[in-house]
Image 1 (cartoon, rainbow, N blue to C red):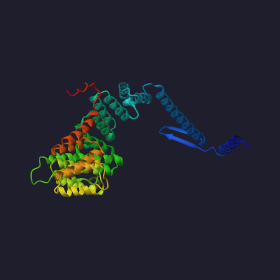
Image 2: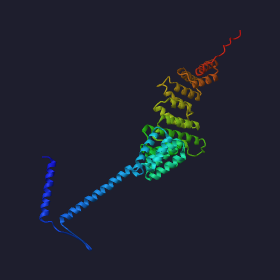
Image 3: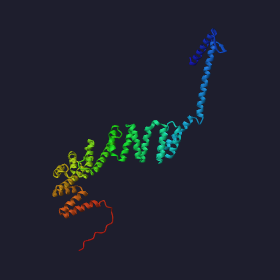
Image 4: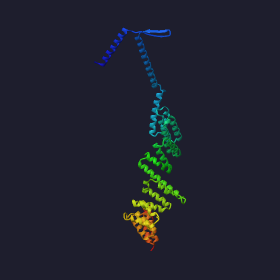
Length: 415
């Protein structure tokens, strides 16, 4: 049996029962108000109330229908304005993605007041104005973005700082980021922008102070952070070395103080140690530099550190030479080590040993510095012929970089 058939039977049953109830007892209903009275049966009254409720419901539905239709049909309705604004916003974002800055700014700015999310319109329009070089217009659009969505101050401030950095407006960017970090000190991207700003300003001390927070918040990948840390401390060592040139006697030396601030891992890094040793040598603190290089070379040999070691005048030149000669057994043909030994032998006035080391170094590798040291020594020893041979070999090293040019025929000696 179908459901519709059962429903018809149920309706007929209810109607029959209702008819029997009306026939048995129609009831009595009296409504009186001032001089007006209304008399009817209970069932007619209920029917009237039901008809009134149905009429009101139909009227309410009709009003809703007419209102909805008006929103869709009326071109000036809020619904249609918003729909058109969203379409224009989409076109503007497409123009922005394609790099058509002028069209993008025009469309996004025009549709912003009626758009669902005006903040997106204003931020994108500000970037488009920036790309056109209209910096004042870009700043004005950012102000309109804040007026439209005050709660988005972080997004607006970050955008403003990025644009200021791109324009080279470093003082304004510093003010923007300082204000932002004061309210949101753990904002990761603000930290990243601040590190970029300090790097461009070469404000190494502030960047050094920012390093712990960059590491804690994991703002940069580990390799990038390590590279930045190395760059910061290299620059700080060079600055400390420059300040040390004007150091008054008795005062704490800025270079050694800066070296003491370095993390332990960096103090054991050979590249950083080389920078430190170079600055010490420039200040005439060869003995301090020799003491810093010696333990590292004992632990792990390095050509760069060995080259510096040979240039230093340690507190005890004999011990310095003896220390370096111990490393010769492991690398008997290393030209850098042999050159350093030759220089240390010269510092100890051991002319024969110095000649042996320098000749061995030049034989192992033809190097212009080794050539110059050897020529100078041979010339002072009166070995003119040997000096000329080495000098000619050194000239051939330099001649290899000369361009191929026509030269005159060598003149024959007169008979």
